[in-house]
Amino acid sequence: MSSRIARKPAAQPPSIETLRARMDEINLKILRLVSLRAKLAMEIGRLKHHHGEVYKPVRERAIIEKMIAENQGPLSDEQVKRIYVEIISACRALEHEPRVAFLGPEHTYSHEAARMRFGSSVKLMPLESFAAVFQAIENGRADFGVAPVENSTEGSVTLTLDLLIDTALVIIGEILLPIRHSIMSLGGAAGEVKRIVSHQQSLAQCRGYLSANFPNCETDAVASNALAAKRAAEDSSIAAIASAAAGEAYGLKAIASNVQDVATNTTRFLVMGTRPVERSGKDKTTLLFAVADRVGTLNQALNLFARNAINISKIESRPMRARPWEYLFFVDVMGHRDDPKLARALKALERKALFLKVLGSYPEGRSAAA
Image 1: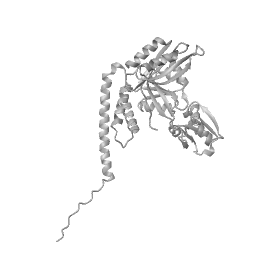
Image 2: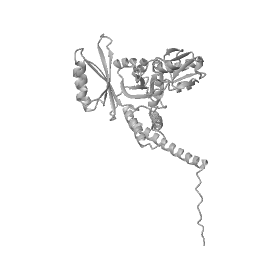
Image 3: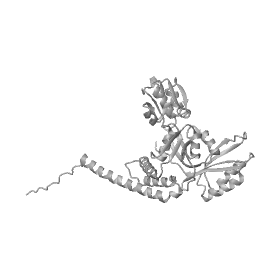
Image 4: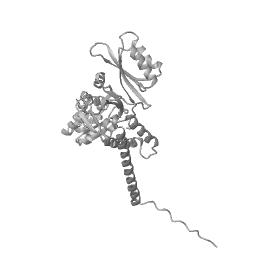
């Protein structure tokens, strides 16, 4: 006698309606938690109000790094970082909306770097020159400023270095922004292009691509990539090299993307402020000094860091304007000026140097995802 075993019906996958209902519940939970976080931020702001400090780069970095460490996907670490930059930015603005100056106009890489660091809940101030950015902070019209200092392909931005010599401002952070150039025009057709415009550094960063793909086109340098995009939007025979965001803002179509000659092309931006920041544990210090023009004096100065096991990550010379053929040295070293070893090296250097200025100690930058 045979017997039949009843089979359980196969479980049905949840419907779209069911999944959306669960998502709506989660959205409400996220909103409640973000609102609770904002209330806590306001309470912290009231408690620390007498210190007058709203932007705390070390604390903000620690929060983002912890969230990235806990991230199990499917969002990428960069996506998690961007989410928390905006949450922190919105909560910070409840205490005070920071004013951040940068070299304008909008949709330049400086604009992108400022948003990447401070988020959207700030008052962004596009200004006409690097000097205007520094002056805006010095006279209190801006709380912070963002300025490019070097590019991995084309080297240092000398205008920024020269402004650092005399300013009373301090470096409080750095931003490493991958530079991804697109070439764009109104029609998006390479055959229509007669002239290519961009900032002089962007043209230099794409010279190989332009030589291979647009050998017969004229190139013109303009004040910014955003201005290049504006020019291209006014003339169909002009193509601009700029960021995709700048092209979108001016209604341009892409002819090609990622046209920079070096795939890892990155620009380093400095964040300037009026108050030094505390140690984060992963810091960099930028300093400026001069030594007597005698054989061995520079080597003796640099050996002070080696003796204290301090790594020098960069050194660059700039002419002293009032003394021809004599130089100031910009140096980046790893560590914070309050670290005992670095403090000891700086004290020894101060005795040996003709001039020493610590431009700032700040959390070491992390390169954003491409």
